[in-house]
Length: 176
Image (cartoon, one colour):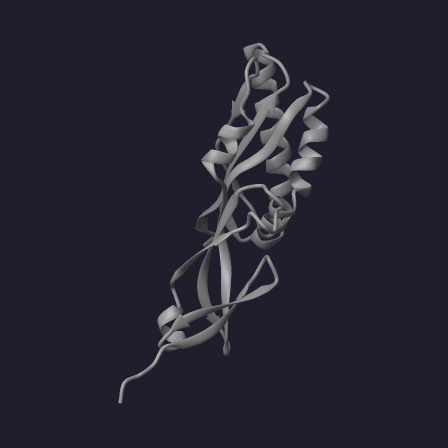
């Protein structure tokens, strides 16, 4: 008799939602990666999250390990006579090491020292904020946009920004 596939529910940790996945049995899903499009949840901000399926007790849980904005969404935001400021750095939070890639667009063209000041101020703020939180709380803040709003208000004192986003946030390695 042939074994049939059936739907197994997976709880996505940051989004507090349950999605059904088709598989023969729940054990085959453990260790798999699920890509989840967040465009409808974020009301038009084109982004995707990646979850790693793990079994906790009897329940399958998707642990988030990556969040990224789509390149097409970033291209749409870029205009003329503006400056683009990007950075990439690692942060050790309470349980893992995270890779942050912030992305800023200024309202007008700015000098190199202004871009450098924006980069340094953003890095200092993110390092200070992320060191005292767990991975799950940081991903919730980035998906909800609260981290970006607070960062934008802080950077507005240096130079007004048209866009302040976290382009990529991913887990580099778990803490030993």
